[in-house]
Image 1 (cartoon, chains in turn orange, brown, red, green):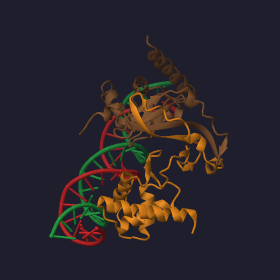
Image 2 (image 1 turned 60 degrees about the horizontal axis):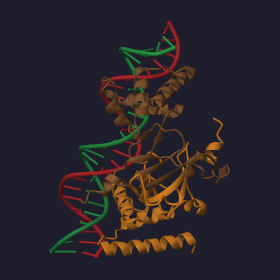
Image 3 (image 1 turned 45 degrees about the vertical axis):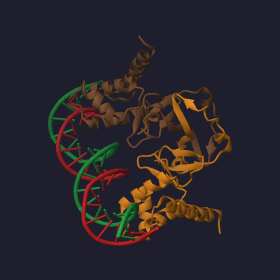
Image 4 (image 1 turned 90 degrees about the vertical axis):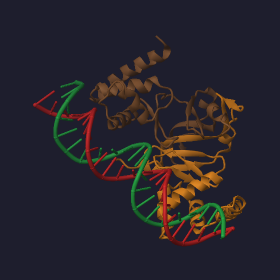
Length: 149
Length: 149
DNA sequence: GTCTTTGCAAATTGTTTGCAGAAAT
DNA sequence: ATTTCTGCAAACAATTTGCAAAGAC
């Protein structure tokens, strides 16, 4: 079993655990949507997830996908990104950074221990209580560098 | 004349200059919308700008605001932020960072020379040609820390 | 006069809501 | 049995488009 699969399995267990704690039902939709999001590293939009999961659950509605993803964000299982017009969902909840292509909107994860160690400004910055940070690099991805057109 | 006003005046001149270079007409709408955006440091949405400018140009349409802001982004006069559901526009085009309130969505600029000096990863990172970067801190702003409710 | 922009209305895209029936605990 | 979820239809929010008239150069 690959590393990524193991991670997904343990995250699915954690999900069921947390549902029980909070009294939330574990439904097929929730499990299937979570599997899909954990499987992907391309930060799918709600609609991407909908299209992908519909293959397995044909009666699934777009509304449910939105609602379930919202629940996952609330539970801290996935993260919502707003770098592009449609929100994208990120299975990676650890501190990490992003490369965003300014032409096609593609978002790629960047793990970088050096960046992670940016000192979190000592607690209050302009009255804010800082909880997280991440660095966003923007530029042109390799696909978008090609086309002369 | 205050510092900010001087900046706005020179930016308005730069705008007219660039329009001439590119053969783009300088219209009342464009000048008025640009004045409004340069006046504000609160990253207004297209709709905020529309509401504000409508006081001076009552016949202005929302469509025009969207189109004009798009043109400004294209010309490099302002920057578009997508931290919240509706896009916000930022008059500050120099390298800077943001504090984003995770409750109310407010975005505050952060100037920090130390952060600016993060070494831009040497040219190609995962095939990307990096052009810019910025650090985004998220947390709870002072207004949102109060309400017990 | 020519070319681009503007305003309007309508279409699109992304997301949310109300409600009745279905599923999970 | 109780509570929460799901699907549907419809509402809503943000943004975009087609087209004729108006404005800038």
